[in-house]
Length: 157
Image (cartoon, rainbow, N blue to C red):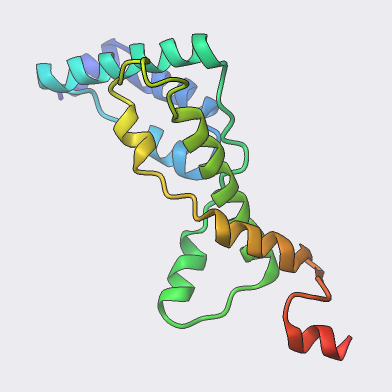
């Protein structure tokens, strides 16, 4: 895109304002990397998604992403066979619980409710609720593991 046009439109200021409203480090990074769409199809799709999101907000209220944590480093460690600490596991649990809430928010309230452009994105979420529940059951805080986290630990304690 023409840098002169972006400067004239104060695109950098818009990105700065948007970035300040992002709820997580990853979202802030995505905001900083945004570029204007150049194809009409992309623009029309983004406008449709925006109007569908606004309709959902009017109908269901806002959606909080406060529990989102950046767990990319933890996932990398797991890929290479590393071990995660309790704090990292609690961050993963928080992310999974937020994903579960977002997925619930995205569900239609009735079968008669028509699909919109956001349905597919909500359907792609896999919150792995069983893993989040197991982490919550086993880890009380960053400093404390539950007595019954494992049978061996229960026996020792």
